[in-house]
Image 1 (cartoon, rainbow, N blue to C red):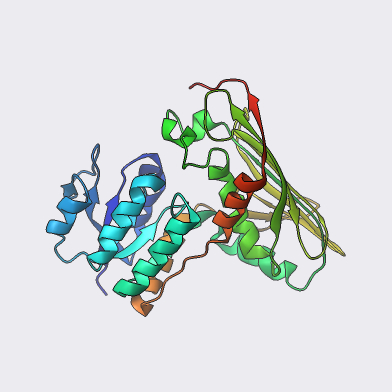
Image 2 (cartoon, rainbow, N blue to C red; image 1 turned 30 degrees about the vertical axis):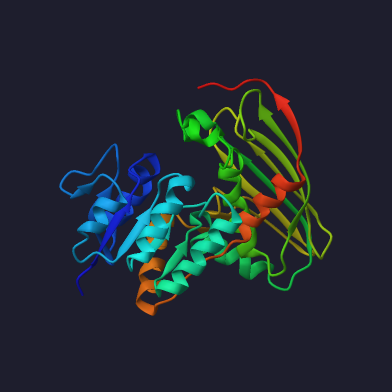
Length: 309
């Protein structure tokens, strides 16, 4: 069966590192157009913006959007109103209200909409979910630390209002949390540090509430030096394990790896998008974004040292 054409908007680091390789390897899709003001892909027709693309989309009926959340909203609305299925890099929008607007537009225009959460794809997260089902949670500790200079070099937009700061990686942890727990957790206490002169946090500590009343916390840090740490330590009555590598590995207390997903998150996202389009369905889980919004609502803010690249 021939693959389906897809357009891709936002040719930045995440596109070159993850999206484009996933599309090149996909049996469901082939990259038929790019939309970017600054860059393109050799051999693929390029358009300056969404308006230019929609004037001549050919047989393309699906677009994947990986530009920053602010301009992404307008692109998504225009695409859906033109009858396009839309796939969105996380976070799906700047605000919860805007995300719900996108959901209404998808329904009104009878198109598929996919809010992607790449970190919770794959066997390790599925295994963790199955292992926690019906269990009493005693402890869950999230440690999500990385060097922003390494993972998002020179991306000043991350510090502007409407963006997430350290919750940009932190929302990956929240997406895993929303998937693996059979009863929801909610944010109950938050502290956050904003660099002097910046508008979004660089560090945050969070306490969660959960029906089992476990010791449940998260430490997020963008000033981390060294390799990234994206780990969860989980303990239930009679069981314990760790979910490490941003949801890619499940590790027993003795160090044995029982599940390891490898680097297949983005291929799985595009396979899921193919399923949604074929079925005429949408997948728009907002729980990770709700946790971030709640953190901003109740967080105690302190001003820390200035940050520069």
